[in-house]
Length: 417
Image 1 (tube, rainbow, N blue to C red):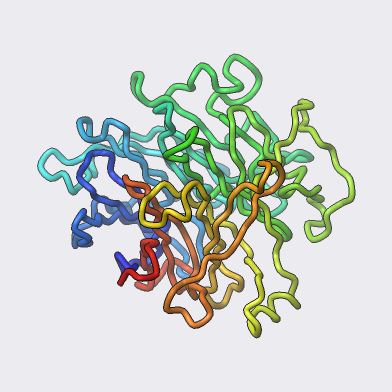
Image 2 (tube, one colour):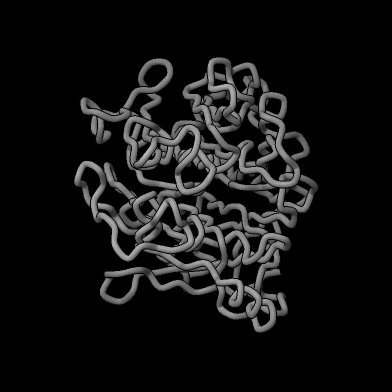
C-alpha cells in the first residue's frame, strides 16, 4: 500500500517513541519528512540539512543524510540523532572525499514537528577516503545505548588510500571504519563508551561494538524475541550477507565474504582456503543469511523467464512483529537493491531459520499483488518499521539521488487497497 510519494531517495522510516503515531522518512537528499498518524505527509520538513551536507552527485552517490534515531525518552526530552555527510573537514587528508558526522539536535520549543537547526551538537566525525561504503544506520538498542554503522572507507576489497595495509580497515580495531559502534550519550556532553564494549581498557577503539564489516548500510533490532541485532552487510562481487551481531564479534571482512574465503587481490574468485580466525585468533562469525550474485548469463535469463535470481546488494530490513501479516510473524523481511543497474528491479525477500535452527536461513521472494510478474520494479533503498511492528519498503526509480520518484509502501495483505 502506497503511503508516501514524490520523494527523492527515501532510505529509512523511523517511528517516534512518543505515542504520536508519527513516522519520519529520511531522504538521502538531506531532508526528513513527517508522515502523520492519519497518513498525511506534511509539507514542511522536520529537518533540512541540505545547506550543511556535501553536494551529492545526481548520477550516483552513497553519501548524504543516512540515518535518524530518536532518544528513547524523546517524548519528554526532544533529543534527535542524525548521521550525514559534510564537505571534508579541516585537517583531514587533502585527497580524501568527505567527512561523515554524527550529531544531536533538539526539537523546536515552539513546534513539535520541527527540529531547532541551531541546536546541533556534533558528537563524532569520521573522515572518509572514498565516496562509497558509509554505512549510516543509527538506532538505540534495547540497552538504551546508541548504535552506529560505518563502512570500511570505500573503494573495493578494503584496500587503497585510508585502508590499513595487509589487513584492511574492517579488521583493524584501532579504526572505527568497518564497524558497528555503541555509544553512551546520556552521561555528560558528547558520548562515552559503555564499560562492556569489547576494547574498553584494551588495545582498540573504545567505541567499537563489533567489527569485520564491508558496508553495513542498514541494521535493526528485533522489537520482539530477544531483541537481536540484524545487520545487512553489502558484499563485494560474489556474496551478500545478513548477520546476527553480538558484542565483540568479528564478522570476517575482508578475510571472508559471507561464508566464503575472500582474496583482496582477486575479488571475483574465492580462494579455496583462508584463515578461520581474526588476527587476534578470535573466531570469525558467519552470517545467518547469504545469497550469491547472478552470473551475466543468469541475469540475462532472469529478464526473459523471471528466474529466481535475487540480486546484487543486500538491504537490511526488520523482523516482522506486526499483526497485518500474521503468516510472517518472527520472520526477517529485507530486500535486494536491484538485479540490474540501469533499471530498478529490486527483490523483496523474507527469511526464517531452517528446521533444527542451524545453518543458513531459508530465503524466499515475496510476490507483489498487482504486478504482472510479482516483482517491485523499483530500486529498493531502505526499510522501516512503525511502533506496532508493521514493515515499510522504501524505493525509487533513479540510480542517483535526484528527481521525485521516491516512494514508501507499507506491507499489507493482498486484499488491502
